[in-house]
Image (cartoon, rainbow, N blue to C red; front, side, top):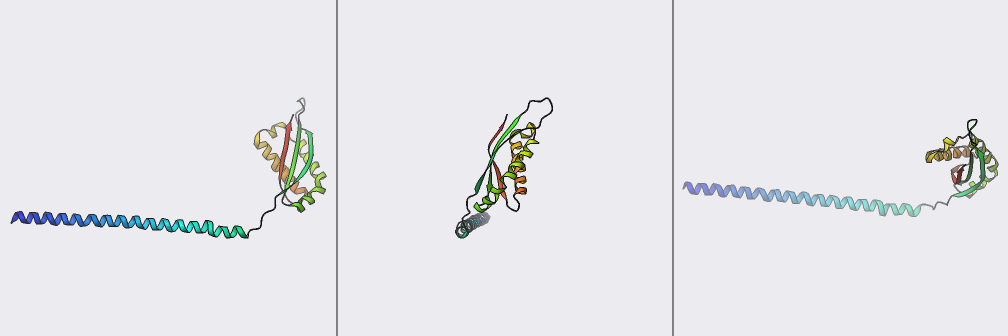
Length: 167
């Protein structure tokens, strides 16, 4: 009878272990299914938000007119240098970028003033001021700031270089 008790206990232990594994497996599958549902809902919401909702806004937006470019006459100046140094020259061909055609028409009568601003500013530069891309970037930003001051209340978006030669 003692043998039967041991086998009954072993069977009970095996049954208890067998019940525990299906519970763990069912929890695992439940978590996997829940994660899949959450990912599907997030993906669907993202799709609706980005493609369906965004498309309506783009359809209502007005097309932006292309910018207008105003040609600035070529400027040739000698750069500032120390006494006894070789004289270096700077030649700049630039274009002004404005928002639209009416703005471009407002800038054209002021071109002599803009050329004068370019001349006076560029003559103060040293050759070391123009080294590298940062030197040209600073030059572009400074010229844009000065042109905007001359054309106020109009606004020039950018001064674009067509040609910059240092000789």
